[in-house]
Image (cartoon, rainbow over all chains, first blue to last red):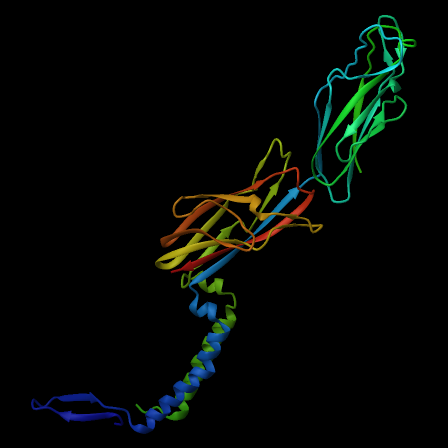
Length: 201
Length: 163
């Protein structure tokens, strides 16, 4: 029996002692191990490292954020008034009693879209007690702020106040004035309603 | 029992081909991991979304659902979990929102920690020890009027390392 040596002990029972493999088989094992490594183990190590040595793992999470088109329009006060003071006989520009009229546009728009703001008067200024009227075109404004424009009120067609593109918070200041002419406009309390129009293009 | 040269090589070839066959049968390591032989990290769901409303009324937007994190190990080991945003939020028109506007609140704390995403940076989300761990992440998005309208996306990678 190759690789084993039979020995008989003093008591007469058999003892099997494993001995070193013969030199020829040792060469075969070395060759086999060498071939196994390069034919199987090495390719496995290179092709499937994750499966063989996985001590980590990864997982993916997809994030998605949707920003819809939206805008808000805020104004500092809901009324603008003008008062003629003193015995004036000559035409004059009377500034608004409220001072500055602030307009704030908050826009989440697209890269190419514009938001336009218009002012339009519903009617001429009218004193309800007398029925007298003053043309609403006597009211005009100066503008402060990028994208904001000066203009004059009209009941016939809206006047452009602001033209804004992109997203963000845009603030403009309007300074209204009334072109008074005491020789044409009788004393009284004249009123009208002005509408702010916003459009996104 | 004598093993001759030919028989020895044939047996090694047979064993090798069997291993190769099994590996080709399960090319995705996760199938093998499911048997509990390797570490497993599970994120559910795999996608979350934020629908931004009026920034004045909703300055902080919650994600569509919480994200559940599950870690399974073959035996009790120490682990570290990392989170990495692969970039900023990119819109369908190429517009960009900084990913640092996305944050999370984790539970339980510890082993997890809260944080804010940073583009291209791996951040330690937590570390612990054990064989099984379940955690939850609630993601939030900082809303603003400064963002251009559109749909923005990005991928976040979670990496589990067994120490």
